[in-house]
Image (cartoon, rainbow, N blue to C red; front, side, top):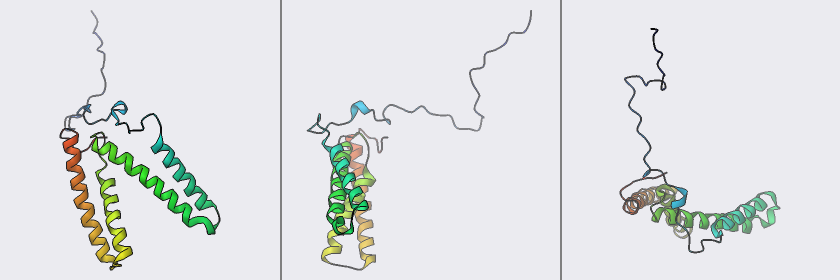
Length: 154
């Protein structure tokens, strides 16, 4: 009798390599589980982002006289739509947007501070950093409670 050949099932990992853990379904957010807005069949968020991008394109490519209002409309509409989508997904425990929401909180606090009080740049940076760190911790805790104990989800 001859020797039998063995089928190889794949390359073996070296002994010193840590074992690869499977990605659990709890860490991966499924598209079907995405929270729907109150205006669900109508794509308001997407239209607002598209209109904002069109306004920004016209502002960048157009004449210098009409740039200010177009920039304000473009940045405002994209920011509002992004904030709405991020808050909806974050508060539903679907995906974590702690850093984005913390950054927006820091901007919302420091912008009026700069406009009204006009402090030194160092003061603005310190206030912004403190607000960012506190807001990120707060939003992570909110997401942890809403997602069943997860601190992030992709």
